[in-house]
Image (tube, one colour):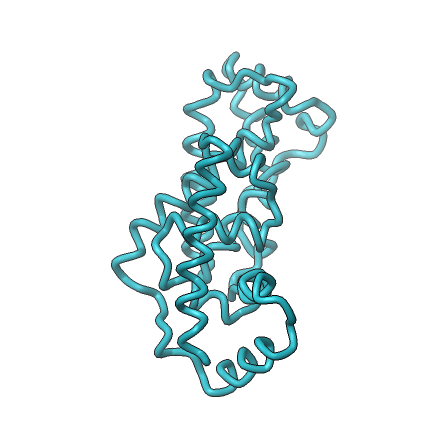
Length: 209
């Protein structure tokens, strides 16, 4: 879906043995005590996770790097709020920060409208019409679209919240409960908003037939 490869992100590497054997919670404690090298270890350990999340939403390497930087900057200053509860690992906590950073970036770039339905090629239109005939139940169409390159052009027409939800549900494969935890929403709110987002996507899909 993207011309960005998370492996290409240029970062300074942490010296070997500088804390890889420590748990995330131990590293967080070290950072709180003033050990900035410990945060470099956390960065090295989790940068690909954040880049993968960002890569689901944005096409360019520059945008992904911006989200990566913003996510870890916010995480650094929010470390005093990280409780290390068993039900919320550092990875889950960081993912929540990354998702919210993506949401903020989506809202900022919404005005620029990266792509539109008018950019859909004839080949893409033909492919999609074939999928409509081959995929079976209509309820599967959205998931099929979200996991294809064509989804970039469709999702760009949704408001940021809708794009966020459908990407987490269909591309990331997260459960409703997991999304509720990441976004800080109730499960019922996620279900209602997801239903509305799918309905909007269906209306966009109908423009192809």
